[in-house]
Image 1 (cartoon, rainbow, N blue to C red):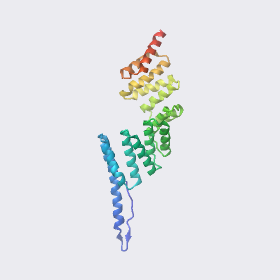
Image 2: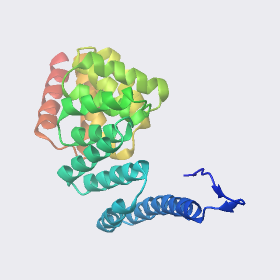
Image 3: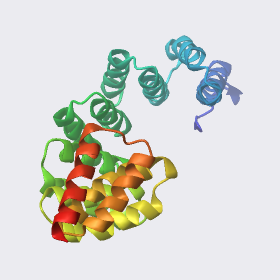
Length: 259
């Protein structure tokens, strides 16, 4: 952060050393706060979360500018979230909002926190406030859409997903969630291409899950062979749940009954 300052002159163009040194102190403090965040992030990458939290806690009282306090509070809040210390995270995000009410990052952070702990209406409310304050981050739009899905507001969830896909048409989770919404609202045929695209984009670790939900669409359009193939993929991928086993039985029964 750069600081501009006026060097005062007193009789015969003497520099006011007090003002000069004060400005140097502010500049050094700003650089120090930036370094604190960088070091904290390095510790985080190394898995030393408690060390990062302690470092930030020691430096918050030393920060002079509100913007620096804000950044440190938001970062510490995220670190608390990663440790499942959700109450401490919420307190930090609230303190950050009280420090800079017009900034959007703390509202977005609260949105993520409430989504994580299942307080979906509060999540939506905070994502809305983040967007109102200028947030255009794709993860804010996607997570807001996911929270709307969780409260069964499928129309608004779909509108949010369209915004995400406008920003990134290859967003794997947006394609997947769009398929799920279409299937949930009875549009199984329309859901299939979105599941197909999601399977192409998703990491291997999520293939079993997406295949398991694509079963419903295949089953509903009467393609029991493909439904059975997806169910087997899902089971092979570790989706050994009662509903999957039941679905396998139903698909097999329908397929052979059709013969």
